[in-house]
Image 1: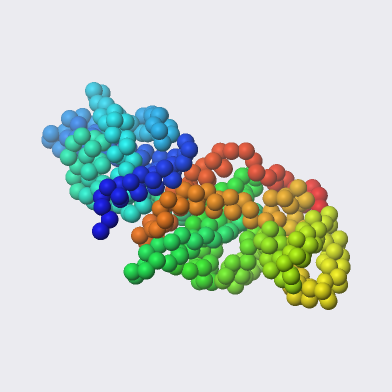
Image 2: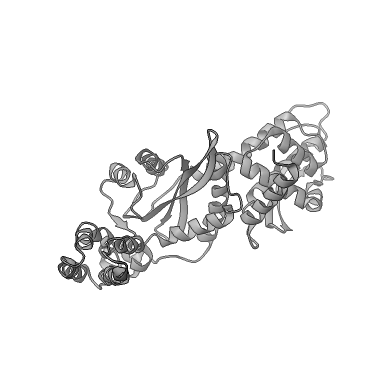
Length: 396
């Protein structure tokens, strides 16, 4: 049996892994806890909940006032409840600042393991300094997971480029440890910004998982798709063709170049083969790329026949990019943008080592991708989409 002290130490490590250097992976959860605790305090002050008829009512609610609060997790955007007659200010903010370490520990446990009535009740009472009803606790526990679910299932709009990938995290399942597949997608919209579009967890990367994932994006309103960019994931091709049959596919050139090296007849030829593939990919036009492919097949027909065969069957999957504006090639020829997202997720989750279930893994991943999403949509333009949206400006 692992001791509580060990568990607390592990959770504290997870907190640091989630928060990182100045990051706010748990900030959304903390904001929600503060806001609900302050609403509870207002109900206690008014002696009535929202829209409740009561002879003992001590005034009326009067909306909310935004307030920024600085913590070591970053700046919290809170909604401070107001009352019509004045004289009310919640104690939660001051109490929360004094007990930040304890709150971070408890929040991280909820974040990783899932929420429990007992734990939420304890945290909320710690924040607002008064007894919390079971109804209020139920409301909060529901909101905590609904907020992440809402992000993953929010309506989508036009998406020009769709980039998808999968990563694996270790979870407990039926008494053993297995790898759960987390499917991820981001898109580039007509305004040239990137957006995280979705995340899904499953015990495998089979076709049915990919198909459900793509259908979810479609059902949420994603439209206008011009190109899908990814590596050659197991089960993805059939799912992609079933859900997006007419959408071109760009296979990641980086992964293709890596795959090519495995067909070298001897180790000393790997660098040469990788360079041959890169020369094809770096061609200035599709016609030149096809000519370079023909020459490479002819060159390696005898000294590396397996590579020549692989080249014939696979290389064109990496040449779809030539159909699109030249000033976009660098960003859409690989799925490296998603690889960077995956690295950030793994950095944040590496201290967790093992998740109790696939739901907890998805919960932590969602917290990370929400942060990345917010940075993207408020940051600089990723691509100038004029040449794609107006074919007359296309410069390839």
